[in-house]
Amino acid sequence: MGLFFPRSYSTPGLCQSLAMLSPAGHLLSLLLVIGTGGTVPSPWVPPQGCYMAEEAGERTFRCSQAGLSAVPTGIPNDTRKLYLDANRLASVPAGAFQHLPVLEELDLSHNVLAHLSEAAFQGLAGTLRHLDLSANQLASVPVEAFMGLQIQVNLSANPWHCDCALQEVLRQVRLAPGTGAGIVCGPGARPDLVGQEFLPLAGEEELCGTGRGGAQRSTDVALLVTMGGWLVLVVAYLVHYVWQNRDETRRPLKRAPVLPVRSEDSSTLSTVL
Ligand SMILES: *[C@@H]1O[C@H](CO)[C@@H](O)[C@H](O)[C@H]1NC(C)=O
Ligand SMILES: *[C@@H]1O[C@H](CO)[C@@H](O)[C@H](O)[C@H]1NC(C)=O
Image (tube, rainbow, N blue to C red):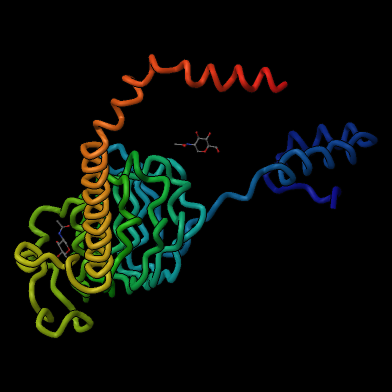
């Protein structure tokens, strides 16, 4: 293997000098091969259909319509804008973008996303500003996924369940301008909500006040009221007790001077001893 010369070094000059140094030729060629082919790291090739670019001075990584079914690996860590739209992504796993510490814009629109991990956007809290989840298959998303993010999000064109979870998400994020009307309840929603715009509904109905979450909340309230009731009873009893016994509690003070009785007792005790 060491005898093979890399093509780039077979210039006449180099050949001549190597021929002159024939005893050292083997060694030199070996060094050349080791020094070039051996240490050059194989450059990372973006997945087919993906390419890197500078857009307005910002590192951009575009993988639109690349037929991806998973978030590609090896995306450069200085990427600020990432376009993964129009692929076949079905879910976003935990920490999918956590190796992209300066990511500002993420486009996941026009995929088949049905599931987001609670930690899908982990590590992006300080930087992510724009997130496009529109035109997917999301019926609900975990509110935890958006905790701590200061983002504008596009949630249009998904088959939303229009439940408490979505109401909580909308309290957590800001919608991209003009995208509110695109949040429409899908077939899995409560029958009377299917096909309706979510925002007007959420404005007039407290969806977290019904169903499982609502039941939990009313249990909490009942518990609180019961505990409050007990507290009032205990305090009332204490007040009553103290009021009733206030004369008796004063008596020992009046009795205090009449201690000789006790000293007599103790003296009798000492005489006994
Ligand atoms: C990207 O990774 C390299 C090497 O691991 C590191 O030196 C660099 O600071 C990273 N860049 C960012 C923006 O984190
Ligand atoms: C939001 O998503 C819809 C559907 O993909 C798209 O038509 C619209 O332009 C998007 N709006 C913004 C502000 O991103």
